Length: 144
Image (cartoon, rainbow, N blue to C red; front, side, top):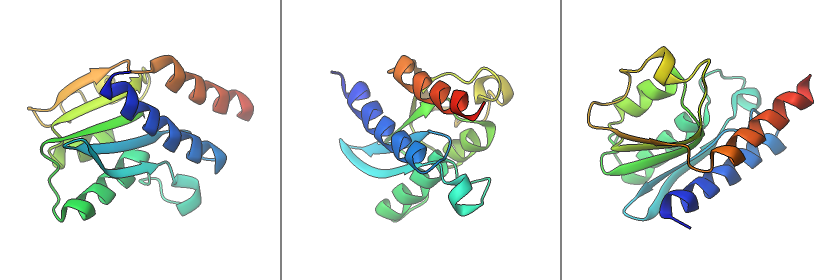
């Protein structure tokens, strides 16, 4: 198992926590020098806050861990392609690398806001994509 798969598995654990809480199952972990410095999952229903996405929760936790707002030399792993809001936050935090699992062809940043990330941010996608997509599909099928 590669490091990307290892950390995406941990992001999937966060997504499962969201699912268990009745939230859209998106999970995120942020890694710096091999250590997890932030983690989060969707809390929009729990907090009644449309901005309480997994990435925002993890960025806040990572910034508190590091004692600063910039996450340079960090990798953010998220189970689903970030939305425009989260991509903007990832960009403002100057995250060095973004790794996401499943694409979001309707609301993902690559469609809606392709310039939102910091210009130096490297992007990898498709890591454990089927597992990430399956969790989302199960959630939305249960709502129909």
